[in-house]
Amino acid sequence: LWAVKYMIFLGLFGVSLASIEQAEHLAEIEPFKTAIVLKFVRAWPFVAYAGALVIAGLFVERFYCRYLCPLGAALAIPARMRMFDWLKRYKECGSPCQTCANECMVQAIHPTGEINPNECLNCMHCQVLYQSEEKCPVVIRKLKRRAAVSSPEMPRPKAEAIANHPNIRNQ
Image: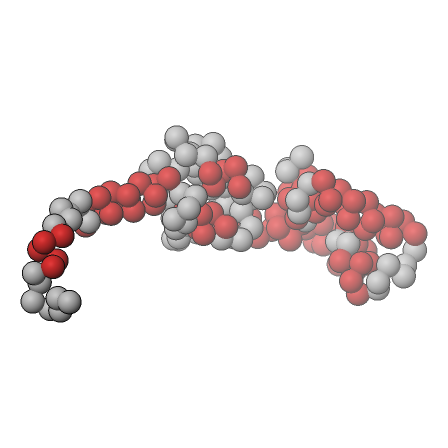
């Protein structure tokens, strides 16, 4: 289903080469003009289409963005040619950890831990999890290791040592 947005984009692009007016008419696949600009005051097919997308969005997060948005498809093309891999990952991401993959709202993270730039919306939720002291197993393990090294069990002072301490006044 994710390939539909690429077909829509290629169709719009091809039509725009022949006729800009026709491409603008076909660009009405974008529901935001109906919903936001015109506040659903439009011909019923446009309202029904926008309403159907709203209903689909109740069941599938960002349905339009994930499956129909031609702009998202157009932006995914240069996303493939990125110069920097700035979304950080641990080698444990994906195997054995699946936290980010399970919490990614658009399922842009494969079970192997790789992020699919064509589907990623750059919401940065995976980067929040990457640094989470509560959810990321790698960070939790590092914190436990650091705590074990920095604060070994120290012997407790004996009661008489405390009582004879020069800074404590005896009563």
